[in-house]
Image 1 (cartoon, one colour):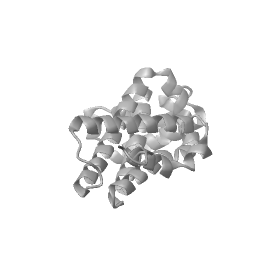
Image 2 (tube, one colour):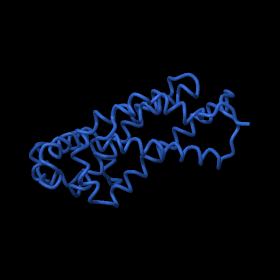
Image 3 (spheres, one colour):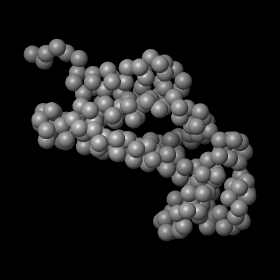
Image 4 (spheres, helix red, strand yellow):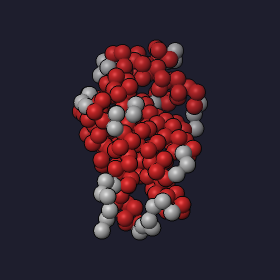
Length: 203
């Protein structure tokens, strides 16, 4: 979305994204046209272009909206949790617990994303930045409360990336429709293993 679009009516933008999302879901991205979207929103094609220049821009905005919505929900849940360990469990559940329910919703995105490596990379980068930010907040809370040992910045980066990559692999299995119940039944164990480790001692 361009800078000028950010200054335009957010209600109309939300309506365009909602209606486009339904069209993409019903007919697929490739078969949906800007004319279809304009008709569904009840605006002329030129009025639609005032907000989005291309169908790709609309698609990108929908994906970013989904990522930011999920981030907001998880952040709020993490804030409400007490200890760092509880915050991390909430984080892991938030990242993975509803993947199964989102599979059908995201099926309209899957083919388009896999065909467009640039878009997939850009969307993934924004999601990964938000994930790293949340993980470091949890670490800092744990360090302040004494639950987590003091860490250097580079160690925090390494841990956050290790967790992010681990959850990404699990999420991919869930997204692709594999091993849903296998992983979903063990999310707290997964969270505790990543947070506490599994060794009886570290001597």
